[in-house]
Amino acid sequence: MKNLLSKILIAVFLIGSMPAFVSAESAVTRLKDVSKVQGVRPNQLMGYGLVVGLNGTGDSNKTTETIQSVVNMLRSYGVTVSSASLKPKNVAAVMVTATLPPFAREGDTLDVTVSSMGDAKSVQGGTLIQTPLRAGNGGVYAVAQGAVSTGGFMAGRGGNGVQKNFPTVGISPNGAIVEKTVEDNIGDKGSISLSLAKSDFTTASRVAAAVNSRYGNIAKAANPGRVDITIPRRYQNNVVDFIASIEELPIMPDNVARIVVNERTGTIVMGGNVTVDECAITQGGISINVTSSEDAVVAPYTLGNGVKVNNSAVEVKEEKARTIVVPPSTSINDIVGALNTVGATPRDIISIIEAMKSAGAIHAEVEII
Image (cartoon, rainbow, N blue to C red; front, side):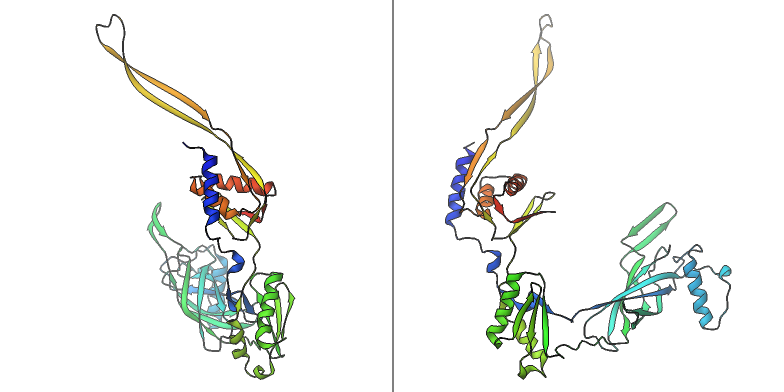
């Protein structure tokens, strides 16, 4: 095997002569892909209800909340029953959740998720009865009702059974109707604010500069995560068109130099803006090779009869330490590319990167997942 050091140096030279990798900060994207208008957000809804019509897969008599809920429901319809006489095996107590999108209007429908909260075996084939869905402020914004469908099943009895996915969780497509709209009066005060997907001083400054380059001095970066924009006079009555026009502005977001390492899979993801200081890398290892063979031995006085003998050999080989001197102009892409070229394993590369970070030779955040 040729000297690994010379192969790495040649690979570094070849890779260094190739066109440089595109750095993370060179990527240009739209403003709408790195920010959103403050106030335009969904709202979570939640409610407690009952699923009826189950084929004996509902809650048992031990689930007191289900029995109490059935008694209360029947009482509201003028039916009086004793809780002791109820056997709610065809009924399941469930929590119903949904997401109310921004600008949803009365009459719009939502998908809801139905999750058993008792000891029901399955809610497949059941029907969710009318359930009010409330927001965090306690107001009712939607009402859910409809058939429940699950992506799993359970079959079998006793110790023999087969289960696929989770039949205690189902969905009701378009099962909720919006009863109340969450009003988002965007721009009613003559201004809007943009929230950056990732807070960064440089990116916020670039967003403000991009808006100002088109509409004049109307944008200001209030902090690394928010840019305040004054709506131009000609767009005071047409905020939607104004937001649509700035969403398409090209932005060059800035990113912190980062290396993400997954030691379980040997995956390494890094940005092109990772820099490396001058350093020396030494790596060595020990390889152990165990071989076995079968030989025939003819012993004296055996009249030519051979005896089979198993021979084993253990060879221990310690490789010489390989030292690589990295100049300060070399990027992490050059180092990893060179190591890949000479056949270094991902685990070796991960070990080298971690050691370089500990030595302060890499200027980047190393995140191990």
